[in-house]
Image 1 (tube, one colour):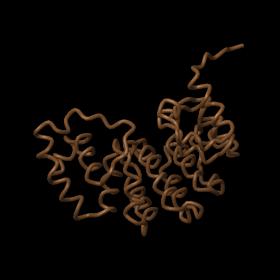
Image 2 (cartoon, helix red, strand yellow; image 1 turned 120 degrees about the vertical axis):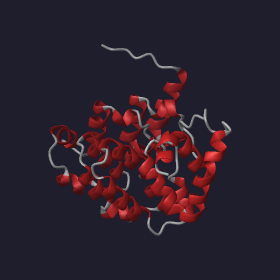
Image 3 (cartoon, helix red, strand yellow; image 1 turned 45 degrees about the vertical axis):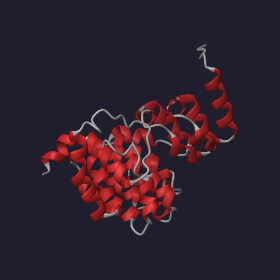
Length: 244
């Protein structure tokens, strides 16, 4: 037998999500990356997967168990074998299914399946908050694909957010998206081309005074696209400078 010693806080969160999975949305990052707690939340309410931490979603054993909990039987095994995932498209029946689909696409190195999942009817009909929530797993998956499929994924992102109000697009601008320069720039472009282009033109001046140089962005959300743009420049200063 293996006994796991849990803190009082972990035990409290475990009981909370077992009663109401969506409570995970109120949890700190440490809890959102706790294997047992997040899995219990997903088993109680599959939509809780929206709140699972990025680090946890890279763990193969966790994704395998989540796929089973969400009735995607054998999906992870297909991804591991490098088989075509198109047969899984019928499993994207609810908006949260797109997060699992994007994670599986990343594990299988299949940008084509990521694009197909984003185009699923359940995702296209989702509300603005759910579409915005899909951007972070999309950015993570895209970073795993490298140059492969980036253009198609940017197009899929544009289609996903097309017609949404600015506030909905702004909600997608979180710290989890920042590591992916292409997706982040596309978000700024979608929000407001002129305003964000001007903002990006000014932040180099702020950086030269050290205002941004040592900032840490993990776990942050941003109050405005300008704030997100400044954080993006701090994260990718060398790459952005090389773009001219």
